[in-house]
Every structure is written in structure tokens, then in C-alpha cells.
Length: 345
Image (cartoon, rainbow, N blue to C red; front, side):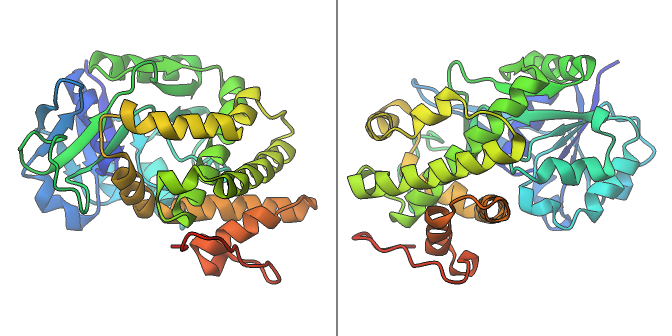
């Protein structure tokens, strides 16, 4: 019998997971807001990005739910939580969904440091399989981009890229995690298992570095060239160091060597130069569009670092200044503004 899978959210990430699960033979349903139901009934167009040009794929035949209560009465095998961290607040819908889906495995993809505590308030921790997304996905065309190479002249849709050697990673109960990985691999989506302790020791630090990089890029006007300037790299390094120290203190774990290396100015500058040539998509427009859309999630994550750091008596000056630069409402009282030669967004 094929798996019955419920994907919560039909944005870029949800569509990619749902499409590949269906390709692997799963019976897929989508839980979305009522406003999105009509458009989804027309089917989805996805474009897999490749060096030799995008591959157009259609996805249809899925069931659509518009309220968590509608999941009751069906035996679900897996539930993918493909919404942003901000959607967990308030978590009343998640609590209802956890009740309605019985003992189904919950694939939990939210990255913020305090997200899992919210989930385990309403769902048995043994049901959760933690996931780290290993692909890039976005709505094409990107705002302001007239080059349609990621659609090859086709209709608007979701473009996605599966970077070589970068599978989506999952950690949790062995049987549940294996079932998740098998379902995705059958549909052609690279996936691999991580030991739960390794996952917990790596992903929070990786996310801290990511948020430091993206928030500094936003403050630098979403310009990779501007970010490569020594002054911005120095600020990025200070924010990353504070964030990593806070995560380390909170989790009582050492900072991985890889996370320290990524914040090295030489490594960062090299990555900034190479990335546009390696990534087969308009990188700056993608970063701006995607991380503006999930901006509330990033701001929640940065604010959590600042709060945890302040509670632990750790330095948070660089973090507080960056928070204020991307959202004045996040600036703690008494924090000096972030000044610089590049206009702040």
C-alpha cells in the first residue's frame, strides 16, 4: 500500500516535496489556506534547473484540504510541515493538526532555535523527524528578472535546483526516518539520514551562520559585491561569532569547526565570487525575493539569539545593531545604530 502523505503549505518548498513524493507513488494531499485552493486545483508547473536548461514537470491529482480538521478520519503515514517558523506562532493550527493525524510521522522542517519546543508541546517527540532542506526553490519569474532561462520560455511556476552532493537530511526514530527517506528517494529527491545527535550538533550552528550572512546581505542592500567589502565582512563576522557563541551556550555544545571556517573573511570572499558562477539561477534576485518573503522567520530567529544572549550575559552588540538595521522594531533600547557607507534596507 502506498504512503498517504499530507504536505502542509504549498509554497516553493511544499510543492517540491509534494511533487517528488507523488512521483514516488505516495498519495499526496496539500493543506493550504482557502485563498490558494482555486489556483492549486489547476495543477502545478515546476521547472527543475539544470546546466543544459530547465526541465518542465507538471504535478496534478493531489487532494486539497483547507483546515486541519479535514485531516481527521484518514490514516496518514507522513505529514510534512513546509511552512515558515512564523506560521507556528500561534500554534493552535499545529495542535489541531497533531490531533487529527494520529500517529503519523511529522517531518519538521522549521529551522529556528526555539521552533522544536513549540512542536513538541503539541506532538509526541517520537513522531517528529527533523529535516534540513537540501534544495533551492522559488517562484519563477523572480521580481524584476526578465531573463526566463529558469522557465525556458514557459509559463510561471516553481523553479527548483538540487545542488550536487547536497541531499535533504533527516534525523529521528530510525524506522520513521528511513520511511521518509525511502519515500523521497523513490520520487527522485536526494535524501539521507543523520544521527539525531549529529543533527542537533550541526544544524543550529549552520542556521546561525546563514541568518548572519543573509541579514548582513540585506543591510548591505542585497548586493553580493557590497557584502565582499572588508567593512561588511567584518560586521558579518562579528554577528556570526556572537550568534554561534549564543547557540553554543544555549545548547551546551561546542561550535563546529566548519561553522567557524565559514565566517572567515577569506572563505566568505571566495564563496561570494564563486557562487554566481556555480548556481544556475539569478542569485541576488533569488536571495532578495526568498529572504524577504521569509523575513519574519529570520527576524524571529535573530531576535531569539539576542534574547538568549542577553539572558546569559553574553555579548550581543553586533547582533542588536544588525537587527536594528533590518528592522528598527528589533533594536533593543540603548543599542547604537549600524552605520556604514552602503544604504540600509
